[in-house]
Amino acid sequence: MLGEKKFAVEYVEERPWERRLDFLMLNPSGEVPVLIGEAGTIAGHYAISEWLEEKGGALPLMPSSGLSRAEVRRISAWFDDKFHQEVGRLITVEKIDRRFMGAEDGGGGPDMDVVRVGLHNLNLHLEYLTYLLQSRDWLAGGEMSLADLTAAAHLSCLDYTGDVPWKLWPVMRDWYARLKSRPSFRPLLADHVAGMRPPPYYADPDF
Amino acid sequence: MLGEKKFAVEYVEERPWERRLDFLMLNPSGEVPVLIGEAGTIAGHYAISEWLEEKGGALPLMPSSGLSRAEVRRISAWFDDKFHQEVGRLITVEKIDRRFMGAEDGGGGPDMDVVRVGLHNLNLHLEYLTYLLQSRDWLAGGEMSLADLTAAAHLSCLDYTGDVPWKLWPVMRDWYARLKSRPSFRPLLADHVAGMRPPPYYADPDF
Figure 1 (spheres, one colour):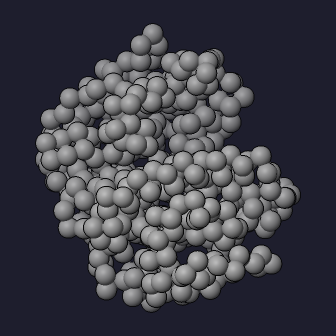
Figure 2 (cartoon, rainbow over the protein chains, first blue to last red):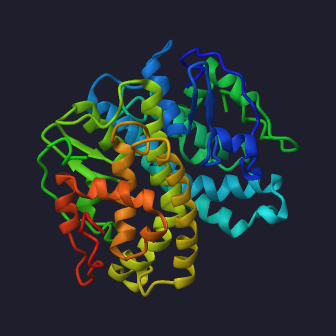
């Protein structure tokens, strides 16, 4: 979202499970993301994305009609709540987050039974998203929006561990290829998890 | 929110765990709330609350400054995500939702170990909210906002089963008494769960 709007930002790594006191002073909920700007500090993806959209920037990521904005927010919430609970949390937390946690915070190797439930749910979600894209160019309507960026963020995490069965879902693959080829995605796709290599097609717009 | 804005609405009961096909056509995520209006259908509390705020109504529930709006959204998301996951889900789902679910959907009596974890977390949250209200009239700033209504909605569910230790948290009790005495709250406090009576002080603004 920052890239599409051409807002300059410097990224700082935070491991929220370490519950650093200085970080808790910025966001008492102890969660990322937190945006620190000249005007002040804004905590949480909901407050940050709405604030960035109010600021405007190079590209609007919400349509002008109220009902169309509601559809963008419905799909964004779908990913942040439902998709994360039913898919992302089960795969990404098991395969990535737990590698970096101490045993006392729940760290360790992935529980593959949990991962399998996530993979099963992922296909149900990809089926619904394919249905949406059969009547729309982008997930929430005719223009690319916050809904597409939210969805791509969640799917990109799953793609990093090679868990998105793109061959089964060609409509979703074409949609994701359009996003991957945008300049805003290049720095994101170049970012690596320490000690974990993504599959060769991960950063390739033609995959 | 509808009451404060004086938007007329008719409520329809929905048991989302029954996954009625007609309801899934309105909201494929199968979750409440869904708002059906003349202009169209809006699904999910995030899309609905932002849409109502854009419509305006009798009382604004977001401040005009961008940073203050971000604070309203931070606190609202705190309740809808963090408070619900750490407290509400553990108490309300165990004590209320499971009474109405069939055994095949996870119905049955409450697991009191789960409820106890929720009660422990509730006191940690009430401590933080008390801290906020020591420097503010309302949770997100100087005016009542969506953050207060969101918080009151979550706490009211816990109050229905008598699980909020108001005596330990007098600052929170005073805040909640101000909300309970508003006309918009009267119909909400008169609403009862079938076969379950709330404690006598539940609907009383002087409790």
